[in-house]
Length: 195
Image (cartoon, rainbow, N blue to C red; front, side, top):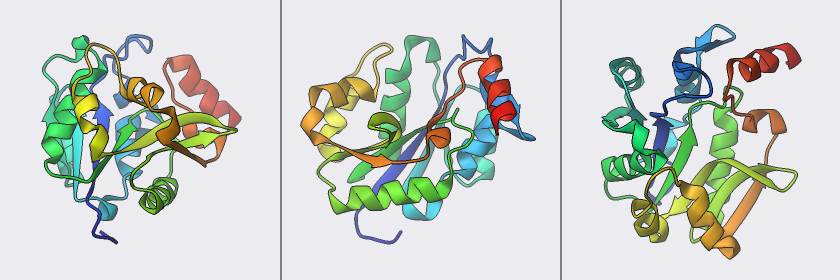
């Protein structure tokens, strides 16, 4: 880690992928599964801990192969709030946590590293990548917001906390393509066709 500020990372990889038809994180883009691409985008040296919240043994095994802590979500059908809670609890004592979704196949670790540097300049604020002023992922939350994140229920995620604290949000401009997530097989195919 490059600073005394303890930042943890939660990779959110426990969704049911209903719109994708299931199995999204095993789907491949340019020869590598989406979950593998997500883990490759994690600048592990920047974090005090990395927790990968998964829903199956394959996800656990891949997290371990990267040296990250696998955390099984036993009830992903209850929504993203459970993944957030499990991930935060697994990180332990951190000053902040970055939440990274696992379905942005073009996200680069250099961009995530730049976001962390951006956050360190104002560690009391929430930092997020954006393009043209439109917020995207990942997002970094300082520990003062952990109680609100832990109190989320159902399919409510970090966006609900951000909406409650709009003045705390700082945006870092990033390439639009890196912020694209894929929710359907068609979106994944289109991403490959437009590259």
